Length: 102
Image (cartoon, rainbow, N blue to C red):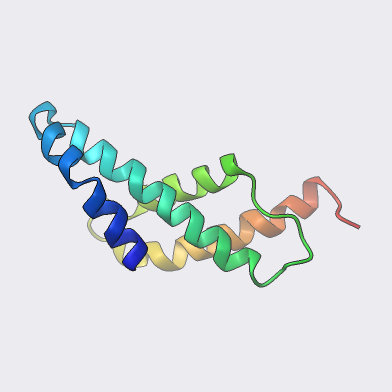
């Protein structure tokens, strides 16, 4: 929580500058939180399976972006934490179907 708060406070001056664009501040907010969610969700799943390879940077980014987008719609955002963790677990274990790890 402190990491998310710190990153968002650090980006606050940019949020204020981008307010005039109308879409810049929400897009920056989405990007910052997509990075943070992707990192946290990947660490959550990877910590339970240290013997398997970690997520790549692009997989973390996709995971975080979809998770951050789930928090936007009004009713969907109530279920977003559960769906995000389930998505992270399915992405992590779904790679076994594509690439056998032995």
